[in-house]
Image 1 (spheres, one colour):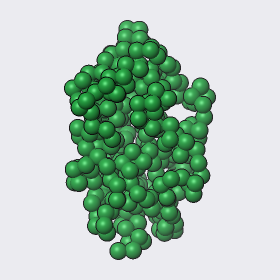
Image 2 (tube, rainbow over the protein chains, first blue to last red):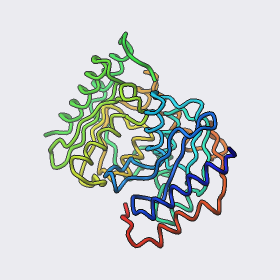
Image 3 (cartoon, rainbow over the protein chains, first blue to last red):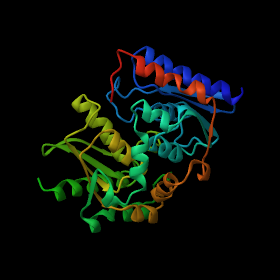
Image 4 (cartoon, rainbow over the protein chains, first blue to last red):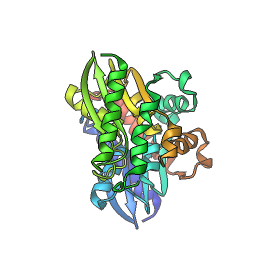
Amino acid sequence: MVNEYYILKAILLAQENVRKGCGGPFGAIIVKDDKIIAQAVNTVTKDNDPTAHAEINAIRLACKVLKTFSLEGCVIYSSCEPCPMCLSAIYWARIDKIYYSANCIDAAQAGFDDSFIYKEMTLDIDKRKIVEERLCETEGKRPFELWQESKNKIEY
Amino acid sequence: MVNEYYILKAILLAQENVRKGCGGPFGAIIVKDDKIIAQAVNTVTKDNDPTAHAEINAIRLACKVLKTFSLEGCVIYSSCEPCPMCLSAIYWARIDKIYYSANCIDAAQAGFDDSFIYKEMTLDIDKRKIVEERLCETEGKRPFELWQESKNKIEY
């Protein structure tokens, strides 16, 4: 199916989610070999889960369906440009390509300030709004040492 | 309890996770009013979920425990500097402050390339490794219009 079909379907999911009062105006679909593997909407308020954006929900569902933690060979269609959390999740999931419709300016106008978080990412740690304090540097290296020594680790 | 207590506990969780072969070398704890609300480890490979970083797991659990999608008044202790996905999730969850131990350089040395994703965030969309293509711009604004018109929405 053409890409427009899947993106319009993601947009319809987003609209339906608002109409039903189930969560934010966002929908996402993950497709592999021209087959829909997972479709999801934003369920932040319904599920009391600030990470439950449409793309994150779709990634989690697609991985469950495909029984894997890597979505190589998959593409994602999102009704809106992914926020930094979702974009990073797409990188971690190794998705091949992103199609989106609304952008982060449209999102900000509707009260979803992804662009604020994008800007925070580009700042040095000590300039960010949420303060980050480093403690116990030496002890913090130990888990990585154990990881590198470990014989039974599954890399990802 | 002093901050060092909680961060060392998060580090111990990370170490235990490696020893058990359950997932990546990461642990996180969410504390409110000097009480542990949630503690979690990385379960990416165990749960087939690329979003199941320690901080994301801890946020989801804390929200479940507190029955809310906002963790205002909470602080997070993470064995490692949060990756961009987790940092954004911390912003969305409205956590007050982040304590961490290892940093993204330590993580990269152990094979976890958070800094690559941080760099991607700072690039213009057309310069990023994962291609993002915009489609159906006009239709994509409709979910936001519905959201703004909606009387029964729960803002977050």
